[in-house]
Image (cartoon, rainbow, N blue to C red; front, top):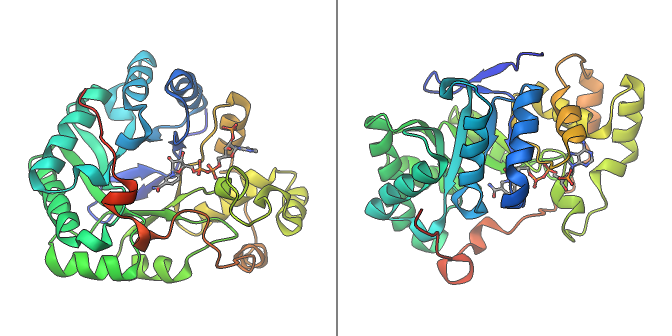
Length: 295
Ligand code: NDP
């Protein structure tokens, strides 16, 4: 079995370069997807309180027979649980559902620009959890440069990770640069551009892009493998989602070929600047708030 390369975070913790994402994976299908991934060699699962499948992720990890220390568990706190005490409690809810005593990486799912005070309090709770050894690393998601600037002004631990939308049609070079300046590891969500084809985002599918399919043909690989390799070679953590064992395996096999500098640049040049996900500045409790149930 291929061993997954590891990436080192800014606090020295190591994260597998590829993980399985489980956004939109129905709870009833989550166990099978996680099991397939762990059998293939994945050692990192990315879930979130808001995905409603943390329990199934934890159950599948235990069923795999792997030691807890062998699997990197990442989850996210939803905005409705922001605030110092609420976020400490969000850790308890997630840890209980996952059935773990510590979480490897806990991140804030979104910035709340209209309530940045609550975002800061939530992050201070993550800092507390880190100091108490309940989480091994902390981070953020969908934070733009100005959100990072504001956060870093008021808190002391630089996020280990910023999980943002990055695929060939939306590369967010400005946020990638900010992450690099702050020594934050970028983690790419929708790394094969899922949001370009599972939602009406105004894009055509990245899987059908002629530049990508041509590069894939050159290497006798699939478009998904080329996009994941592009992310890996540029230093990003990638977390593709699939519920199909064959695709879960396909997505994992990206560590035995190289894209050339020209090929990487050709993929970079596909950036349209058009975001597939929600505008980070439009995230409000009024529009996106929802209850995260107790375990
Ligand atoms: P991906 O780029 O991972 O694409 C997923 C889509 O591609 C699914 O429709 C999947 O279908 C399909 N697919 C997977 N592998 C292949 C393949 N080899 N060939 C063809 N189709 C394939 O997008 P996601 O948006 O799901 O992002 C991945 C993960 O990122 C999420 O699961 C989640 O963990 C995280 N995420 C985080 C967000 C955030 O706000 N922080 C937002 C969105 C995602 P099928 O399952 O049927 O195979």
